[in-house]
Length: 267
Image (cartoon, rainbow, N blue to C red; front, side):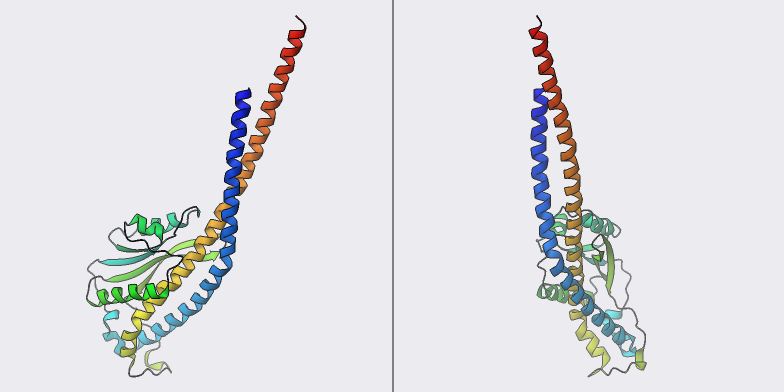
């Protein structure tokens, strides 16, 4: 019985240490949420402006000649996949990789340490991924697309719906679809829409990758906070159950000792 109470004390101490760790990680995630959400919201506004500009340009008849609007069907696809730098974020990383499995023939370009580990490539942090990093990536991707190295360019990212809900999605960036409006647009491009479109694509791709990375990071932080909150509640419940079991075992040991003493005194 004494051995049982000792094992329970060790177990309670271990779970208590784990609870302290999950609480610390929850506090860190909570402290990052506000800043991550601010960056995400600014990115969403920038994303709307980029998409509106490209929609207007792609609607122009002259822009149909752009190499970025040419559709090919050779089956070659490149996908930028954005995952987290760390685990312990619930299903955040798993959902991203589950979606990636739907494109087995794609060539993946990872952002985030977990994605880089999965695809055995040089580590690129998703938390510290900058527009400069995205610009260099976009320049190479746009060049390869123009040269026919692949047919479609997509990004797998995680949409932030709420603190409790995030969803992995794929957004296709290239080639552009024909927009609506065309010559009816009141916007005048100099020297012409085709030239503007061709010179805008690299910044568009870089901007979209950066924005989607920001939103994915906000989703990761929120997912980690919820996961640590849930783990903390489970640990607290486990400690209560173990403490109850320990008290019962200790009471049983005391009762047994008293019984033995009483029995011995009667001999």
